[in-house]
Length: 253
Image 1: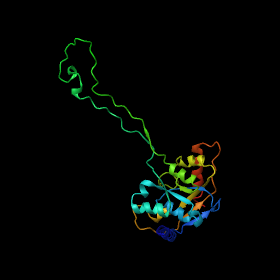
Image 2: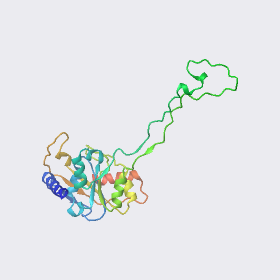
Image 3: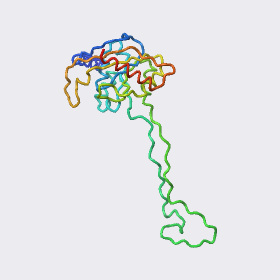
Image 4: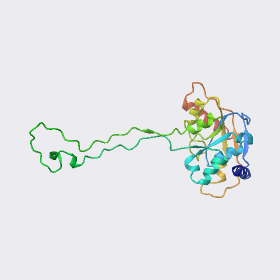
């Protein structure tokens, strides 16, 4: 009940501050499984696009949230999980190689008497046996694979949810989005039945400029465009560039 009431509070606040206007070009709001992908200029982007969706779509659509930012405090974590039903992604995931394993040198007491430091070697009455090595060279350990950063998104799609993602991977401050990362392509290839809908979020970065703590009421909008379809043999970079162009094309509509 508390989460539901908080959701109504945020919805009213966002619409009061921004208007949260949704404009649908190329596709209507429809209760089908979708991946909404948009430009990213503010931490409030996920809230803005969530608020712009009709009520029947908000219940089946989960925004993607950066785990390192949105779990920094218990309040942020509660809001994103209980209110927005967000999917966390770990922006630090990848493959990390651990430090090389260095074997310690053998203690002098473990060496033959004639091999100990400061001991002059004497001829042996029997064939000489090579002393133990004082130290073994560093041996690199194999890289340890970490969790796939797309796994939470894939799990949500497998459950039938729609999701909201930001293919730039991080916020940008230029007029145009940064080059898209490969996640959108990977998901599109793995879930070909899911509809890919581009979106442009306008003005949200001006509601709370960097360094400000009090939001400024400014009319904002989210423009949804025609779905983008991944070609059967289309390669990653041409598809990502085409998807990015589809988002930019909505800016001036």
